[in-house]
Image (cartoon, rainbow, N blue to C red; front, side, top):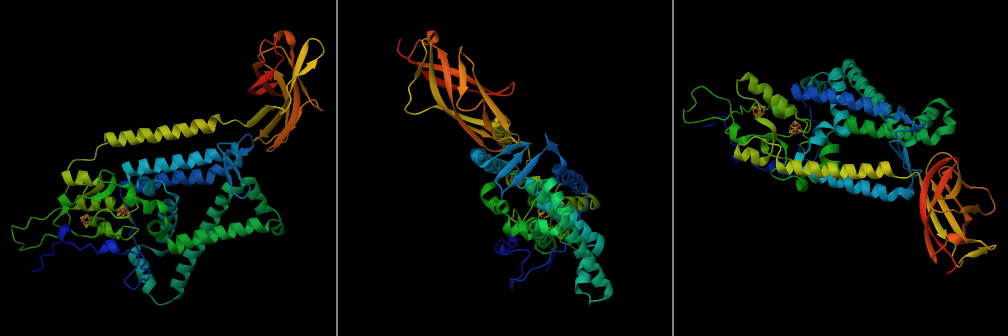
Length: 472
Ligand code: SF4
Ligand code: SF4
């Protein structure tokens, strides 16, 4: 007898070997996700507004005339929080990458795909911008499906054209701002306002980026998360049974099914009424009741949908909720566990270390070395000098006329051939100088001393070096 009841344990595992978006013939199955509504969706919507303000606003923010962020890969020039980084600072980027990977491993082990659902730009643009435009123009999921199967009429052509025009316009706007993060908003303005012929490369980049974004949001969509995204693919190794995920409480929900008249009394049904609302709203087309799956982007649409159903059938909310596999198995609520606290602490620690490194990084790098093959020179009866070579890397965007003074002793500096060392902006300067000390202050063959480097009256750096003198 078909009771209409399914038990999770009895469902086959074929979903593990197939993608929800690809049919048996290997053809794309288009996902017509229902429009989510609920507390979590509203929270995500407001958060997405904040992200959009940040994304579209940051290129206009400048510190000392420099963009707050710029990642000019073609020129190898990066600006982070208004500080310029050059290829010479590559070790910081290496460290940033290691920190980032470390952070991802810890964060994902503790909080699962929280980032994908709540902060990932792909999810936010897809779900909170493009899909909402689609709902606006084409209607809800059923209307979209009906339109797809309808014959070509002027109404269908108009609606689909409008959707694609809007998608391209949005992609073009995003591409402009994306490019602004690479070349800076000022150069972007030049591309927009100056004659086309002068900015062929810039305009081509704009069109390529627009095309890629349009292709992703209009056609590729959720597959960017389920097939391409390396972070998504890593979930299987990063998650464990204690990770926080969007999970279905099978203990409470099974056996699932709609209560029917004449149902045998011994059949004790779980809270899941098998209404498929959680599946219909899923943007990746999966059934979360099958357990943790790589395609789940943690968008929480199924939580909202199921909570709505639970309200209607007067059952407690949370049949689908944030939980760990272990907490579902034991029935324990998800706590902010010691493990999560340790991981959060470690994440904050590595982030702090990187921030300290970024903020304490010097704008000027200096190397001072005694000229090889030279010992010391007698200067009259009472002074001795050493000859030094100096190399200076200027990471700022202004020229620096560099002068040198002795800090820790009486003495003077004489730059060879010029009054100061010229260090061009975003470039390198070099020179030689004599360091002259009074003989009476030299007690050892080797004396450690400090030099101060000045830009005008402003001391910008101190450097330690050694001075060779005659043996007394
Ligand atoms: S929405 Fe809730 S009740 Fe409906 S099928 Fe999904 S888990 Fe079951
Ligand atoms: S299973 Fe739920 S949380 Fe995961 S992608 Fe689908 S709707 Fe979002």
